[in-house]
Length: 90
Image (cartoon, rainbow, N blue to C red; front, side, top):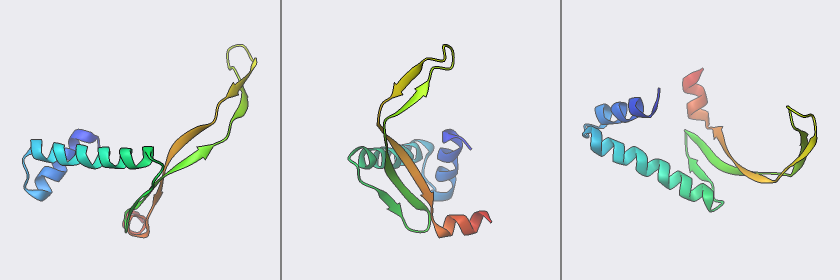
């Protein structure tokens, strides 16, 4: 399922027009993104938790030249599925 399929599914299940459903889906994505960029987590009970994991700086190798290079520290988005989601998949 891609984003357009998700918008169509939301429109069908909620009775909204596709443009209204697109606005709702975009609003949810924007709210999650803003919250994660502040360092907060988003907990959706029964679905899962979005959080930010801090990744330490490390050294790696350039695959083309084999030279060592430094990979700088960064923040990575992370998702942990909730019990309801896990149960519905299995």
